[in-house]
Length: 452
Image 1 (cartoon, rainbow, N blue to C red):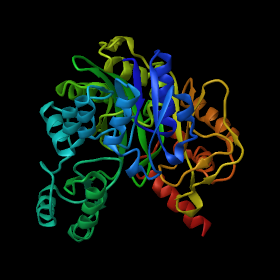
Image 2: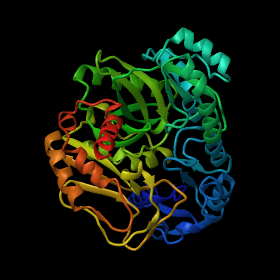
Image 3: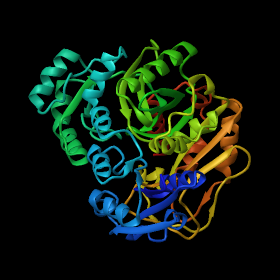
């Protein structure tokens, strides 16, 4: 691998370019007109404009990106996360163009990206799955029939995608009839496939994911991350390890993730995601993500492993350098997704001109960002400004350092979620780690009611 095109923008493009430079790989940035002066454009060795500001005409224009890679002499493409990262057709097109796709093979993306097929693979590997449909449900009548067998409450999910799009929780048949059409249309718009997947809903569940690395022949896990603090199915705060599982659950869950990845010959970095019943401590496979995750820095801080660099090495044809007995976690890491959103206005995205920016620093504080003073937050993309990640010798010290780091963070000109996180750290349930996937939304509702 000599020249890598990064088919993304923002903090993940900066992250990938830095990892490639550390390995001596030249980089090519792509950018829309809105991102012409973005940091990832300056950091790369070469930059190519790929279209106007809307993502559909630039960062989602697969043919244009492949042509840019050819023109720049790239021999590999890294998709980052989001945009084209889990599009099997894009991975196949990159390979057909004679370049390396930094990720699993298109067939694996296709298999794991479909929740129904991924569930079938997991069940065949002996991994517990939540009761749900054996295939994607295309219409309401089939959904009502399936729900009668699964039982309520249940969750509607897009069969062909993730990221929280299309998800609805319904308590009875009336709720299913009301939600099915809207959820199916949302899934069709996001993934080109309106089929829905139905599964039993666990009311007090933790969302825990296991990081895996594979080279097509061997697979290792790199521990787990807690991802339960979510709003509208979107993660806001993550940590590694999980405060909500014990050693026995951890051992069984990580082994299950490795079995699943081996079953499909997984190559690259990826995650296997589980729900853990907070009352019975049972865990169930829910989906696999065939890409680097937004929250990967938490795992990097507790293990000392550069996951993006390992992705690049494996993509270049190297075997895994890591054995399972060489991977150990030390301490605790917490990540906060700092977004240009206004919590006081129901998290309304807040694009605009940024003035003064002060980023926290000091021992064991990491900030992955594209943000600079006097820069513009464009309205066309995700509102993520920065990922603030801290490490401590234990969870208590990580929380204490998080207070200090959030107190140092200053972004003038647009509202952000940083102040909300500072308040969150003071909640007793956060300090004790006694939360589940519904806790954050309930806390936010309580705050709104108290303020009204």
